[in-house]
Amino acid sequence: MNEPIKINWYRCKVDKAVMSELMRKSDARGFLQAGSQLLLFAVTGTLAYLAFLRVHADTWHWALPLLLLALFAHGTNGSFFGGIACHELCHKTPFATQFWNAFFLRVYSFLGWFDPTGYRASHIRHHQTTTHTDYDGEVVLPQGLDWHGARLVATVLTFSPTGLIKLFRFWIAAACGDLTKDGFFRAKWLLQVVPESKQQREIIRWARIVLFGHLALAALFILTGHWFLIVIVNLGCLYCGWLVMLCGAAQHVGLSPNTPDFRLCCRTYTCSWLPGFFYWNMQYHVEHHMFPAVPFYNLPRLRAAIAHDLPPAPHGLWATWQELLPILRRQREDPTYVYVPPLPGHDGDRADDRTLLSEASQQA
Image (cartoon, one colour):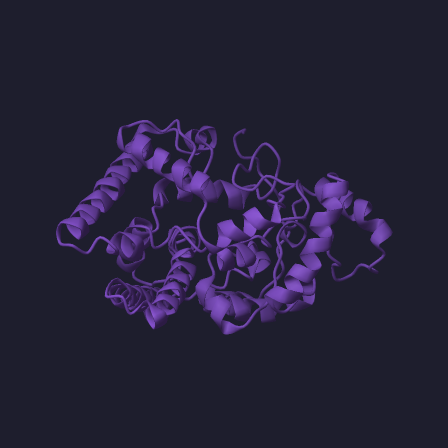
């Protein structure tokens, strides 16, 4: 990957007074989101542990289904902690008071086995050069999905053994001062975006806090006879990622690389409040990339302000994936294919897709 280039991004026009209001941060809204999600994590974890105790006491005929359901809900929520909750906290926009952004970022990062220092450096580059080949190491198009159906379903409903091995290998190596192992990102990319020794030392220091902190908790749980809390606390964010996959895969997949128009390389969809809550409103992905300083809770209002200049957005995960799956199938047959959404001001003739992309690229 090369050093970032200067891209003349297209951004929709927004009245300055409206944008000033949209960029306003709120501690109350931040606490409502971050606190509620952590509270839910505690509730589902408690239910799972109580059900486990009933199973252990041989009342499995009713407690086992409750245990599985509680673990399902617990992991579904926890899988959003790393790349989603920490993502927004890395933007420093949920809270007006920066202390709370930093505090909750550490809490979510610890529970989610997440490196905020490396991620923030990478994500700044991702926003600067979104889907530009050789510059954006976070999203490289074309992106595909694991099309081995049974394995994909098993992985997203439980956990990925290879993913866990890769994750723990990174944290063990990083805690030992070695940042050459692939983790959330490829090691080559991570070392490019954090070339300074100060940042690298911060990653190593945090890796030691995370690794030894979790080991200490695990030891405490075992010594006190509550070993099942390892599944709930230490591993609670590392399984059952089905919903985060359904929500997050749509962000850029099937869209255009090397374009200076976020409308062509990011995808927005709308959904009901529950997936929007878990996903911190990142379904408004075009809007987030255009104006990353707007807090997640104001993205629906931002969408309303600029909707006239954006492609239409499908509503709901079902409709989104109905649109997405044919694109992915066509890309499997033709890796050069990209989907170009209809933009306001164009007549919708899909024969002009290549011309539209060419015109957009020439503006960079």
